Length: 261
Image (cartoon, rainbow, N blue to C red; front, side, top):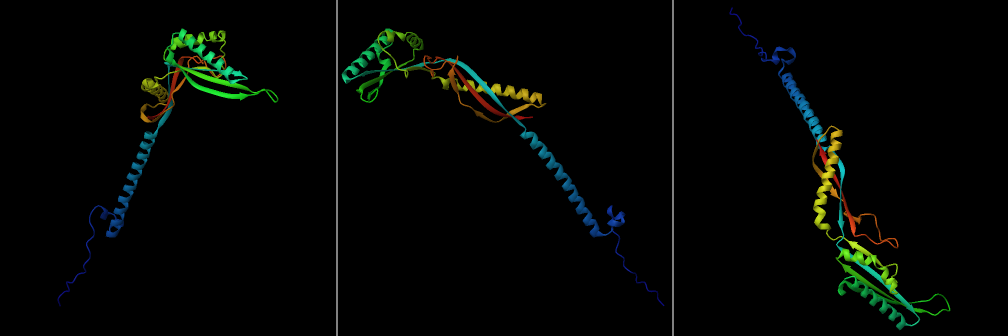
């Protein structure tokens, strides 16, 4: 009787590194664990990159905002002097005659001070009626305004110092009369002053960075404040008896935001 040589076919065992361990002998298990390893590696790498990116972003966004100031003394180059005077009378011709007298006296005064005739212009005339109360006659009030415009600051200052001469000539200026000294060269000095204010701001930023163990990078953003022109010595024409000063102080403040490294 012939021997039955039929044998049971057993699937060959998986080979490779994972096959050495019983838990990995199943092919599906090998695939599952391989996928899990890849995902774990991706999550780890992604977390590292995200954390590193946030850290670098935080360092990039570090900044400091400082102010820079620049000041400069200048002398006005234009004088505008407004002279207002008036006369009162029961009749119009008398009031007008007094105003004409005052106008002629003022023009003569400025001519004696060395000004040309055309620097003094009539800039306003007003006629009104006023009364001191009931049952009292009304009076005519004639008011006139002359304005001097001159770039000769020295000559104008001299005239201001001698203006009491008008009182001696029976000319009384009203309280609205005042002189203004104006500096018109602001646009010429703006670039230099902005640069100076920016340098001042950077010096403050560098001191801040030094104290905090950092260094100053480039400008993140910046804003420029208004240019302010004031009397250098605090003189003002707002109060009676005080003339505006031709000696001015120009000031600008900039706000600059610097990156910190």
